[in-house]
Image 1 (tube, helix red, strand yellow):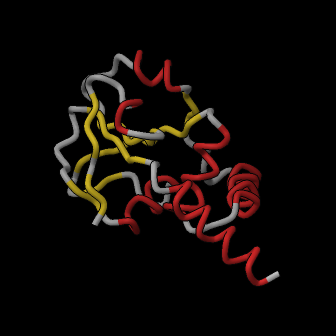
Image 2 (image 1 turned 60 degrees about the horizontal axis):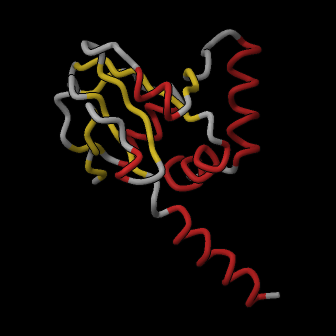
Length: 133
């Protein structure tokens, strides 16, 4: 049983390594902390260094689940519970979900958007990878 758990953890670590945080070209930020990524995607923070940021989640369930485990350090179940609670209390609405194709077609060039993709070659043409500190 211990070996199974260890193999699962190792597999998940390597499987999740391909999630990249990307930003639209209008963002001036070059790097961000993992803590800030968590706060942004849970909408506990909406700006960094006086720059308003809009986050976008993926409609791809596998990518979404990998992102939650890798960057939010939560289980998918806990995140669902969090968003249900936020919606029920009227405090927050979850980020908009877009497919990779819709993300590539996003035409808002003035707003700083944060999203995530599976790998560099999936990245929309006008976007850039942001470094995670």
